[in-house]
Length: 125
Image 1: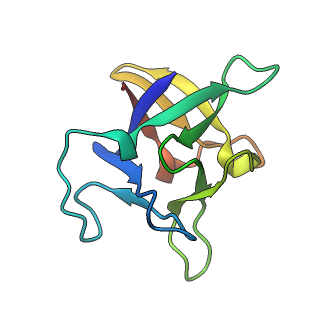
Image 2 (image 1 turned 30 degrees about the horizontal axis):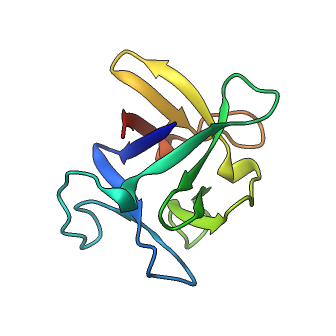
Image 3 (image 1 turned 90 degrees about the vertical axis):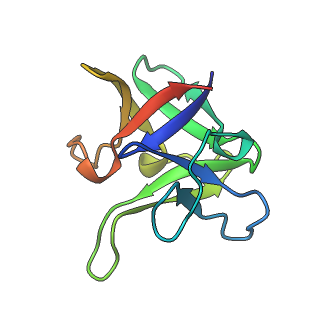
């Protein structure tokens, strides 16, 4: 299913021309001046993980990069980045949850606790 994701109400995207790092940008944050509407660089493919009913992976379609969360560590703030297509581990897997305001994706740590830095709201593409 093709979707757009919002972090704190702002679209996230990945510019396919920014390799080899392919960073994730957030509209209107960290100097980004994009305001919307979301386009092809902000379109992700949401894929249900084999054998699961609530675990998904997300791929930036145009860039061909897997969305990944990086939890905060000393000296490094929590942020989103990308990995190679198919590089799916704990931080490239999201849990789908229905919230009162819509459907969200949450990252969970190795103990299953929700990582509050990365609550992403789903919007149909």
